[in-house]
Length: 197
Image (cartoon, rainbow, N blue to C red; front, side, top):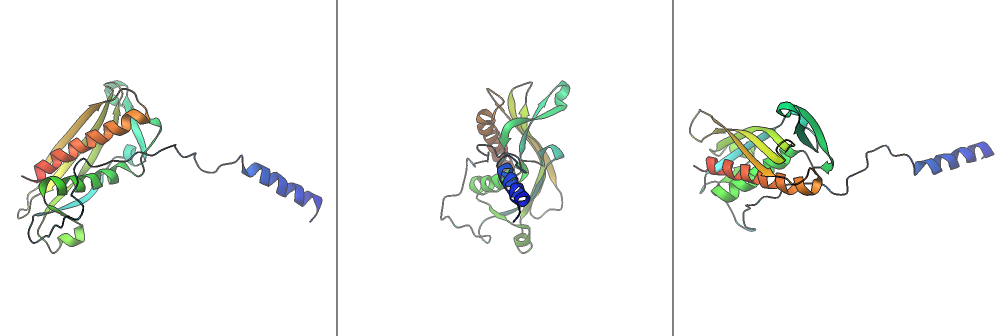
C-alpha cells in the first residue's frame, strides 16, 4: 500500500469519530402507561363477555412524528416541538394501545382484532387523535380524541369528542411526559365508560 492510500485511510478513520449521519438520540424516550389494566392471568372469553374491535387511530400530520408539539400564537396556529422530548413511537399507536388496555380493564369487554371480529359480534371503535401536545398559552397538556362507535347489532354510528387538559409547570420533557400520560388516561377512561354503556 502506498503512502497516499495509508494517509487517506488514516484521515477517514480520524473523521469517523466526528461525523454522524443520524440525529443524536435523546437521553430518554416518552411512553404511555395505562392507569387501568387487566390483572395478569385473567382470562376473557368472547362467548361470555361483550367484545369491541378497535380500528386504527388516525392523527394529523403534526402528530405523524415521535416529537411533542407545542401550540402557541393567536388561536394556537403556531407549532413548535419540545426540545429533546420524543415518544418511543407515534402517539396515535401509543394511544390506541392505551385505549385497548383501558377498555378491557374498565368494561370487562374483550378487545378483538379486525380479523377476530369477523366471527364474533362486536362493537366497533375508531377515531382521530386531534391534539396530543401542549397549549403554551394556557400551560396545559392537551389530548383530544374524536371517537366513532358502532354498537353491536346496529348499523348506526355514534360520534363524540373527548378532551382532557392537565396543567404543566414547564414546557420540558420532565413536565410534559407525566401530564400527557395523565390526560391520555383520562380520555381513555371516558371513552371506556362510553363504550361500556
